[in-house]
Length: 64
Image 1: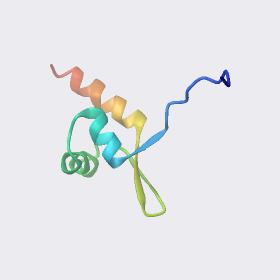
Image 2: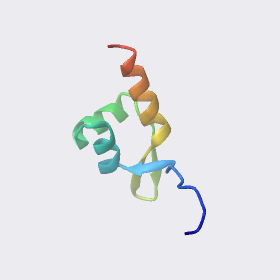
Image 3: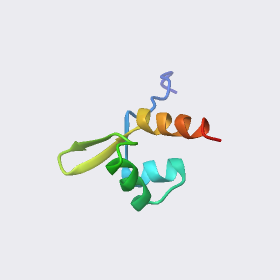
Image 4: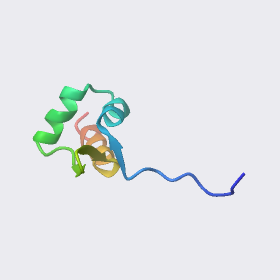
């Protein structure tokens, strides 16, 4: 065992982000286009910041 703590990723792939919040890819891209999620382009790859996923869930928790 290395003794190091696991590190939460800063960004995740689109499929992983969609799975994390329980939506499909189309809905995830919709949330990005509406400015509800922050995405980052690294080369040709699109990544979603985990901080924006947490903020989205918190905002929607307040609506219920």
